[in-house]
Amino acid sequence: MQRPTFWLMLLVPLVGILFLREPRVAQSEETFLRWLLRNSDPSGPMAPLTVVEIGQDQVLDRDPSVEMTSQGAGKKGVSPLEFALFLQSILEFKPSVVSFENILNWRERDKDQEQVFIDQAMRVPKLLLAAELTATPDPDAPIPEIPAFTQVTGKRGDLVEFSGIGRQPGEEMRLIGTLGFVNLPGEIADGIHVPLLFRHRGEVIPSFAFQAILLWLRVTPAEVAIELGSHISLPQGRTIPIRADGTVLISPNAGKKARHFTLNELLLLTQQHESGKKSPELDSMRDQIILARIPANPLSPPDVFAATLATIQTNAYVHRISWIFDCVILLAITVAVLSLRHISRVDLVLCAIAFTAAYSLIALAVASRWLIWLPGILPLGAAWLLVLIAVATPDRHRGKPKATTIAPSVP
Image (tube, rainbow, N blue to C red; front, side, top):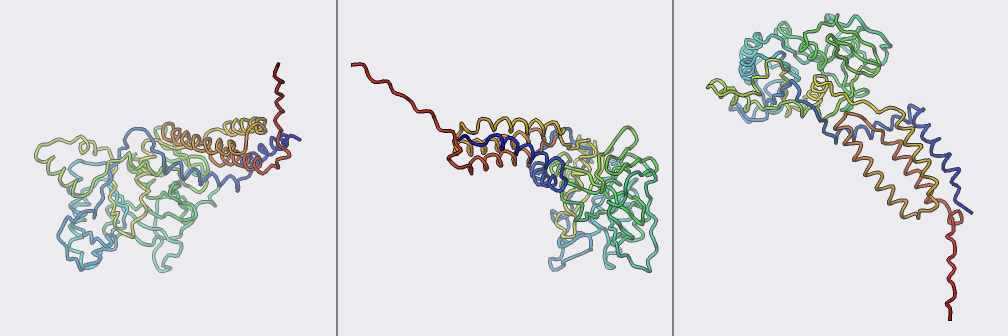
């Protein structure tokens, strides 16, 4: 009796259709997508973005016994003076936007140093300050006025809802800057999906990353058209693809397209620039976003904002390949069933391992070169399911080789 190839040929496309039609099963593709994006290195030009890491080096002499100088500095004890030095250095190159992804809120004993920082911050044309939204605000606190988008279509129920502002900078700093909300709700943010939109008391407002882009493009909320579950339309023909929950798909490695400096490196380059030595990297900061962050601070948000900004600035959005590709893969695997009865079990397993390795490498190359996401669970799962069923088939279903007749020797 031959191996029941007809039932195998029928089973493979049925399982594939289940993956294509069932959203809950299709969510398993997110696991392969996360691996794909974390291991691919997207190609393309450098983003007009500079990330300055403050607190990586000891800039000023500090008392080792001091654990925390400010709520925004963390264990390294970054003081307002260091932020003031950062602003003084960066303002020499006239950047478009200067943003802080850590919430700047210092203690009372640092008020004198804070004033030095504020004096420098007042010289920044567009200053973006981090803050956090909350669903349980102080009932006695006044309701903040947050500029909202007016051109919004689609269902808003999937956006994360907040009703007030929790942690935020002091009032004096809020008067000279724009707030950007660094919330990364666990139900929608996972390292490759970053929220661009939130819901505040029924209104749609921008997140920290999107607010930085709006300042960089000199765009007001009234000029933005949002279709939830589809895209965000910006002036000059820019569009940002978004999901229904207001998140954008990014590559975690997109942050490599930004220039990275520590504060010490920036101070050294500034000193060399003042002495007459030109640096193209610093001269190009005039039209860039400057993102200041404290990586050593345990209260710092995950390092996803640089990747988000770089993705939007370079239009490097990863998109899924057409569903036609899935149908072609299913058809190819279905046709391969015909040859299963001619292949041994060991060879089937070896072929499946080789196919898995080759397909994964091709998927990584395609994602890096063309920013196209190839599905993983569907083709790889169908191939291994095919092998599993073939290996589990009893020997009596295997085709028996024809006996070889040896002709008698002629005397």
